[in-house]
Image (cartoon, rainbow, N blue to C red; front, side):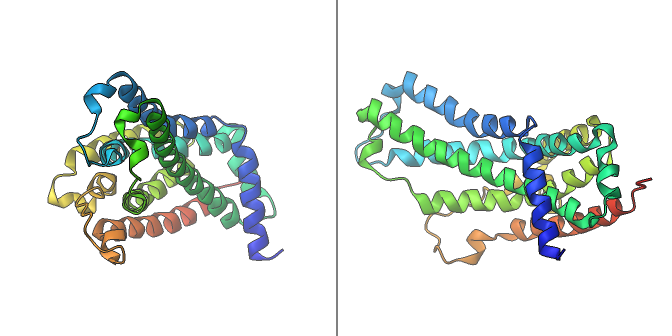
Length: 264
């Protein structure tokens, strides 16, 4: 088989295994939680949330959901989802069984890593889709909120979501390696939770630029709506490059570490 064939077979196998785990439910729950809460608030307190004349209600509705929830929720989601997906392989020493098969170890490792990345990407997509859906439903139920009179700032929202997604790739690689490395589910989960909390607390410190668990928070600032869409720095601020660096280093280092596992 060719390199490409091994990789895509691994992706297919990992996708099939994902269907039998709680990971899919967790993805849906995390994507739904904040949009649902905002929807309920707007339904109950709609009279207090009517925008001033000429003001786009999507700015407050969408921007607040994205900027206020992603920095904390996405890192926690990554800690949970990586631990859940890899825990399936740790049961009954399935990882050793996989690595004992006549298939390249890299296809197993990077196939599963790709699935984790895809799961996070799907969560972002579902999250934004639900925000847009809820806004349109609110516009139909409560025309006074003026959602139907304005359009969401799609490009600006995609910029924020993209920056956030890139900013968490570093901790995704770290948590993926930890979850692969330790059979005990509690170790990567506990370490990840502690580091996420530390990252949120330390995000305001200048030194946090070197701490990947702060990147999700840092990526939200500064957000300048007047910046040109073609400005590369807006799409890839400094924190994004640092996150990509951590991702490459830990993805490769993690593979070589796992490759040395005893499969006998």
